[in-house]
Image (cartoon, helix red, strand yellow):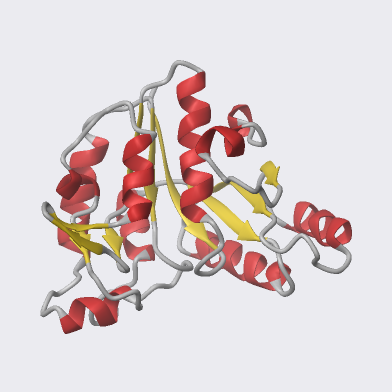
Length: 226
């Protein structure tokens, strides 16, 4: 039976791709077919084959089902700025129907374990009044929340979880990505997150010198997902 999840973060730069790649790697170690996608990415590099995003490439590297890059990351923008601003500057309209069609083609591959990674936090704008969260709602995917553990993360995590629930989606699990290990009262903060977030913690990922997918996977527990 195939499983598919939307990867969201409490903010930008909290390690969504690092965790997503680790989850995909963990699934591959269990003998599952895997597929990761990132519908919208800014901060891309121009190559001979066109714009390429390192986060999208990291997901491709951990996907056992290989798709053309443009199918994995259909909307790529060069400036490392908010996607809706980058799209506007490029003369592109980021609309949910186009994103939905692209991601449904990914889900139709029926990988055992599929991850669709968002951008930034839960309420990232697209065009008009649309948000990237509207894509997750349209796909009706359960959500895995990456919590970037640093000062202020508890409020960000709880607000994100509340918004996910208000949008009618299941929070399937969360991952504590310890991006600031010097955070004061770290253990107390992690305990507060575990007490208050209405989903299992899939793992605590320490600050790693080399945050490769295989190293991250060692700290994750896929069996806690429904």
